[in-house]
Length: 407
Image (cartoon, rainbow, N blue to C red; front, side):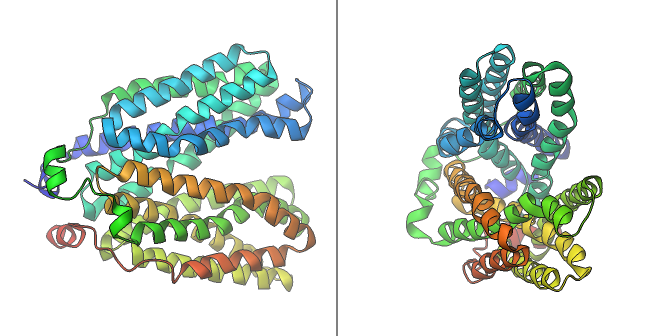
C-alpha cells in the first residue's frame, strides 16, 4: 500500500485533529516570537531602556529562530514530529517561565534568544504534520488553514501582552506565552506522526536521496519566496505609517484597516491553497500570485505618486497578494523534498525568508523617508523578478491522480 492509499483510509476526524494540533503548535510559537515586540513600551517605561536597546532585546526570539530552523528540521526528519513539537514547545515554555522571574535585562535577552531557538521547532514539524496527514489533492487548503496560525498568534499576543505588561510589568506579561506554550506542548503529546515508509523501503524508493542534488525545483522555490518576501514585509512594516503620514489617517482608523488586511490576507492564503488543490498544481497559482503582487505594488506606487484615492484599494489588494504565496511555497517544498528531507527543506525555506525579511525594514525605511511611491515601486521589482524563477509544475506524485479520483 502506497502513501496515497494509506492516507485515503485514515479517518477524517483524526486528520482534522492533527491539523488543529499543528495550528496550535504554530500559534504558540508565534505568541512567543512575535509577542516579544509588545514588551517594548514596558521595557522603555518601567525598566528605563532606550527604544534601540528595547528593540534589540525583543528581537532575540527572531534571532533564535533563524539560528535553529534547519537544525530542528534535521531532527524532525530523524525522530518525527511528535517528539520535536512536545520537546521544542516545552523548552519554549521553560524559557518563558524563567523570563517571568528574571530581573536582569541581559538574562531576559538570553532567555528570549533560547526561547526563540526552541520555538523554531514548531515551524517545520507542524507543517509536516499537516502535509503528512492530508492527501495531495487537499493539502493546499489544509496548509492554507495552517498558515493562518501566525496572524492568530500575533492577534492573541496583541490582545493580552500589552495590557498585562502595562498593569503588572514585563515578567507578568511573559506568563502569557509561558501558559500558551505549556498547554501546546502537552497537547502535542497527542500528535501522531504521519505514515511514511520505513528507511529500508524509503532507500529503495530513493526517498533518502538529497533532493537538492538532482533537481532544481527546491532552489527555485526558495529563491522565489525570498523575492516575494520583500513586498510582503514592505507592506507589513510601513502600511500603518504610510496611512498616517502620507494619507492623513488617524492611528485608530489606520489600525483598523491594517487589521482588516491581515484578516483578508489569512483568508487569501486559505483560498489560494484551495485553488492549488483545484487546478492540481502549486506552481501555477504561485506564478499568478507573483504577477498580482507585482502589479498591485506597481499600481500602488503610481496611485500614491498621483495622490489618488485608489491607492487605498491597491494597498488592500497588495496586502492580500503579498502574503498569499507563503502556503503554496511551503506545501510545494514539503511535497518535493519528501518525508525524509522535508524537515530540512522547510528549515531552509523559512531561514532564507527570515534572513532577507530582516533587511527589509531598514533598507526600505531609508527609501520611504525620501518617497513612499519610490519604495513601493522598487518593491514591485522583486515579485516581477520572481515570475520567471518559479519552476515548472513539478507534479508531486499523486496530486493529479488524487484530484481526478476525488472528482
